[in-house]
Length: 108
Image 1 (cartoon, one colour):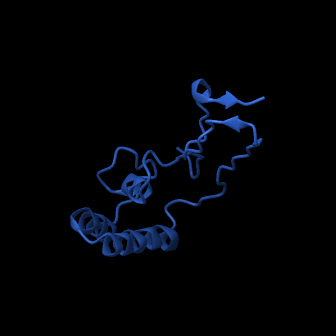
Image 2 (cartoon, rainbow, N blue to C red):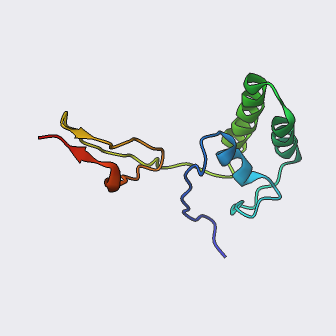
Image 3 (cartoon, rainbow, N blue to C red):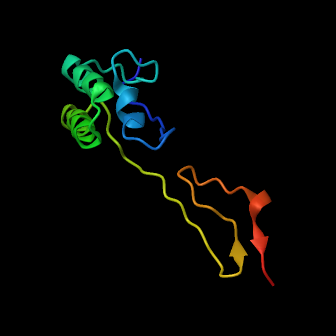
């Protein structure tokens, strides 16, 4: 039994739903056990919405529910630090901050 716990999550794919889907009542990743039918309905509507802007607005409403009902309390966001030089090429930025060294070229 516990009242509070720490957990980490980062986006698996470049879309807002990587965060909103986690807190669906049917999600196995919903480690806080929060259930809200209105939230689930907003996310379900977003899945079916063909207009990208309207879809994002639905996910925004769902996210606002997370912020106002507070089943989670984000305390920390990952920070990435990087260095670059003008003669180093092939270091491509990516959301997970993973450097693939096999494509790096250093010009002398």
